[in-house]
Length: 213
Image 1 (tube, helix red, strand yellow):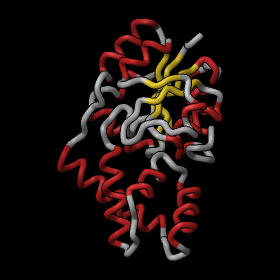
Image 2 (cartoon, helix red, strand yellow):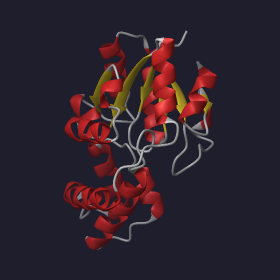
Image 3 (tube, rainbow, N blue to C red):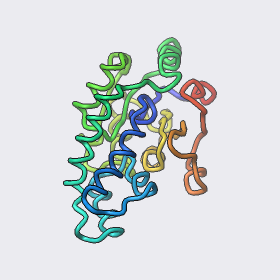
Image 4 (cartoon, rainbow, N blue to C red):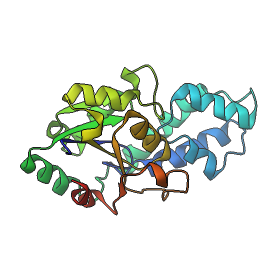
């Protein structure tokens, strides 16, 4: 039985992954690194310590992940200021549907909690979730299961009774490791052969989650 749906935020609820993608590439190149598309995609929803190690393995010890991330944060903020925040298709419909059915909702994001609350407030959905949690509130970020386990604890549900809606491989791995049922709503990439076996399903947009309840 599905009692709750837990959503990632960036790329699932709001159309921000494209800004992170562009900003990572620009910030790394400003620091002198030949940062390609695949490197930016690797960093989606990724734990900072793990991301730092991965980038050093690729680019060498001179890759200062945290300094480059600071620049990336500034660039993302500038892009959001310029272009605004856009809701992903189907967000209002699916939240209304879940509320009508009495299904709990939560957000489990890699974004810091303060920024998460600001973004959800801006698109008018902050008060529509039972709980909102960030990977910064737990020991290990995605792809570790911590943030999904924490979200399940906060809403009082077992992971196996929760659908986790994600757009990135790291998010899918996190939800699967926690014991949730991952449903992918693709954003920048489609599920590959590694991710497909972890999925409970794939939906074209957020309204497609109805098919898995």
